[in-house]
Length: 314
Image (spheres, rainbow, N blue to C red):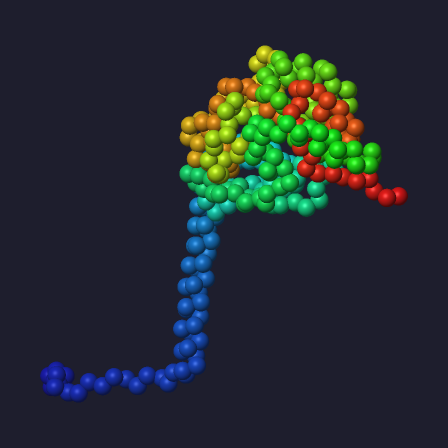
């Protein structure tokens, strides 16, 4: 029996012939692989984004960022007493929250032209600078509250009012000769005709500031507007001053930066609350005769009319 011979190690080894590959099929396969990988990656990115957004909103809820934005929206209105603001929307952003306000000039009838103001905070609770609103017809008056001392101002205002038709309605900033505290404010309101007293009590925006308010930064509001129905409380006698003080007492030193961005100095705001003085009232819907009657009161220094609404022609 013949022994089996081992294979020759020196023999040439050849690669078997591979089947022909279609270049188009190869490119399509590569393309499908790339698209599949991209699709899987996109799914992971979307899922990760959703999870991150949920986590961020849970963190924001834990820090009461929604309540913080509501307080800042109130602060914006306090810093802009010549405007009326209505919330037009609120909700989460990528890393924070946003609230939108439709603001109109405080006038009678309401100004149809609204400006959209955006207030947004980030994850750390820092407020971005809000939308800048244009200067209103009342801005110059608000800047000069308590600083003007023209002896002929009342006579000029009476002449202007006398030229107006009786069926017009006015929006005006009523400035007091001296700032009024709570007791003086009640006494003065008791002397007004019922319709005028109701306009001040229910629709009036009280201008609050410290006794010496002429020194303020350029960006800060010179006076702060407050409506006594903006915050209800049960601590003692409820008035515009007491509700204003209640709101200011809930602000903290950590709010100073955000308040500055809406036009409020926390230091001056606390001074205004401590002083408890009303320097004037913004009121709308008065007739020329009613404003003329106010000018006869020595408590009133001036009634600065900044908007006139003429009756429509039938």
